[in-house]
Length: 324
Image (cartoon, rainbow, N blue to C red; front, side, top):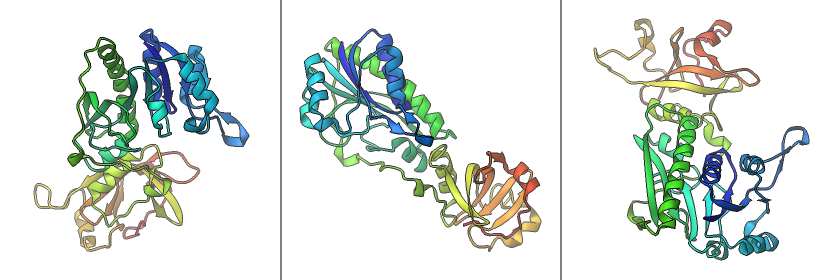
């Protein structure tokens, strides 16, 4: 098929590479403009790097909906379909109507659940057991188009990066299979049930702040959802300490004892949320609004990620100290 590909981050790269591998005629790759990186060095988007490696012409307008020259080139190519994967801009009707068959999107959730910018993070945050990718035909609404195909996976104890990379590869395979159905006239379209639609708003850096009045499970999920960006963090001695690995512990597990809490520390059960109850080779156990959190891996500003056991060797952590 004659295709135009629109995408920007790492998540979109496997889809582009798969379409090239399948032999589709990709006339243009549309991606976000180059940005100034560290020390003024220009940074290409991951999709631009992949497109250049594949020898595909690249368009990089600031706003594709207002880019008359770029849209004229796209229209002249006369594409059968436009494939959109995490492009970063909402497309107006004239672009959606441009290709013969339509515009098709790879979305990182099982629609209509978790429409929006951060579906993977939100699936982890809310403790979902499963997630996946959906291929849909795009319309002007937010991720509300008719669905064609889905693929699922277990979340388990995976963090954001684990699921991101898995769904990226799944999306590439699923898009290739779906395009074959579309090309052969075998694709079946299913409308989304608006009554069960949910949303996953964009994540900001400040969202990484940990609130120890929340449950230990909630904080555990936040740490997994925000690895590697923006990173979950709390305040320790006036600095932001990032928490990279932690396990939620519950009250009254098995033998009616507090899981992971040594007998001599149980007198601190009434401590405020955020209080350190134990710090040893197994981790740093912190009181939460519900349950306890065993911090296993952390990082101070300007330092590397370290196991909590290694951190304790170089830092004296006072029992009862409150992390904020």
